[in-house]
Structure formats: structure tokens, C-alpha cells
Amino acid sequence: MFVLLIVGFWATTLYLNQYSFIQGDGFDYAQIARNIASGEGPITKTYEYSGFKKGWPLPHTEVSRRPFYLYIMAAFMKIFGSNNFTVIFTSSLFYSIALLLTWYLSRQFLDKYYSMIVVLLLALNPVFLSLSISGRPETLFTCIFIIFLWTLTKYNNNNFILYRALSYSLLVLTRKIGFFFFPLLFWRPRSSGL
Image (tube, rainbow, N blue to C red; front, top):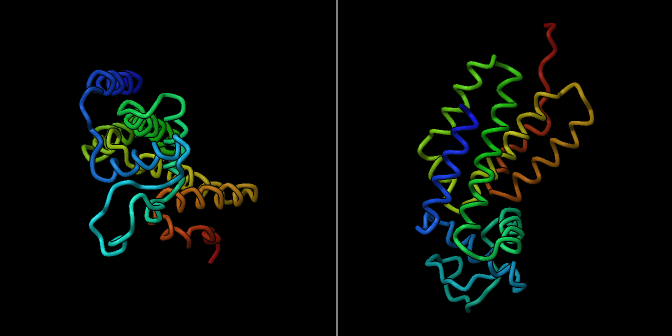
């Protein structure tokens, strides 16, 4: 059933590709990634109505968007071209990977039945579904966050401290809210004795 759900989502996404589902900041991410893919660098050619950028000449270097997702989308644009399909494909790919990672992480704590419920709740969440075709980095952030949570479950293995730091760095490079998870870098469970 899980595989059918993902196949159905992908088929619907590919069928409806002629419409632009890219929304909100997805437009900005797409045009900056297009500029990176074409060799112009992380510049924007649109004017945002914020006091921070007011009066900057166009085009100017983009400083308010985190770079990791931009460069991943630019790599996909080099492969598939700069079009709506590439933007939707990038978001949808990370949506699917997030579902698989959620399945893997939940199976460490729950049995198969409850893990399936967790994945279905995430897969059918209307907000997450809309983000999966929006061109925004939230689906990639979710994937990296699940990996970060997975490294927290491996607290007895010292090698996972490096993986935890790497996944935290990617969180910060994907969304600014990643800074809030800094204290979790040093998290260790309490000893069982009092």
C-alpha cells in the first residue's frame, strides 16, 4: 500500500505538471537556482518589498535564502533543465525520501502497523502534501531533520557524533530555524541510576 501511495502521488504530480504549483518562496528558490545553474551565481532578478533589500540594484546577490537547497535544485536543473517539472520533481523527491526515512525511524520504536499509520499521517498531511510540490526547501529540511533525529537515537556510538554534527550543519544550511536545534547536538540520555 505504501508503494502504491507513492506511485499514485508521483503519477498525479507528473500528470498535472503543466500547471504551476510552485508557490510562495518557491518562485524565488526556483529563479535563484536557475541563475546558479546557468552560471550567474546566487543572484536574484526580482525585487522583494522588504526594508532589508529596499534600494538594492537588480540583479543582486541573494543573502536571505539558505544555500543548500538552492544548489541541490540547481544540480537538478543542470540535469533536467530549468522548468516547472524540475522544481516539482525536486520537492517531490524529498517528500518521498522523507516518507521512507519516517518509516525507517518509526520502525525502530514501533511495530509495523503503527509505523504505517505514522507514515500515512505524514503522507496525507495537507500542508506537507502542498509543500511537496511547492518548490520550497521544507521537504529537504524534513529529510535532514529525520536523519538528525536518527543520530540522536544512536547516542552510544561515538561515530554518530560526527553524523549528528553533519546533519545539524545541513539543517542550518537549509533553513534558518535549524539554529534552534543546537542544544540537541550535546544531548545525552540520563543514566538509569538516580
